[in-house]
Image (cartoon, rainbow, N blue to C red; front, side, top):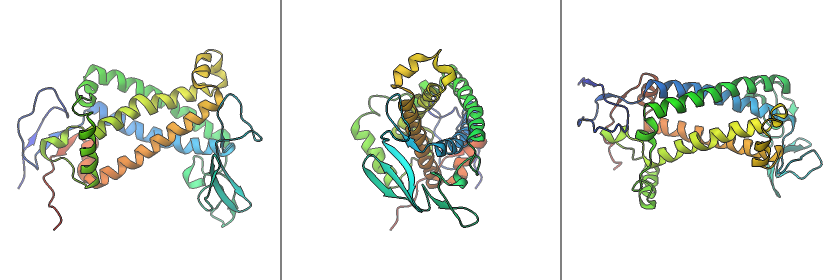
Length: 290
């Protein structure tokens, strides 16, 4: 049976929406959120892939102001002959075929940290990777600034991402973790509201990982160090900034993987429709397995 379409405020609006049953089509995501989502997705993907190619030029990370081939690195991706490895501190993990060394299309071993299918460009070029990376870095910084300003103006942050004391209680957080582990997702009107795990992860990305990756990126630029010397002091030197940049980027990639997994598990068609058109069909309760 067809259900009526209801034009409700976005999730977590201050006024409580009228009760609607499962199957109702409602408005979920604002236009600003949808534009930010897809701009961010493209930008982060290009920056991650071009960043991996930049890392290929020197696949070692250090702490402090200095770091070169003969200095002790806390992370290294390399190869012993045709055997790839990932070393973190004193722990060395074999990674042949994935990291350090891998086969190209001609079946020959290539000794680079990350394979061509994961990088931009696909063949080694530090210069081209920097062009891609820096061009999209400006897109990321500009889009983030606009999204922050717009979300403050339309009260998206205050209405959707504000964490209450009750939500932050350990008991409530643990309850949401167990519900997600059992694939028990919110239904009805409750599905429109961000749960505590979503709020924590989105806040970590918006107010933690993205600003960190931008600021550490600026710190690594020799052309900006004279005017932004405070950043060098803040992050403990260019090499520490590079390490933090890599860690923040890895955090964004981890968020991306979890985000995609949740979209698939919660219902990819409904979730994709909501982030493309803004319209979302309220889910009903799933039958418990017998």
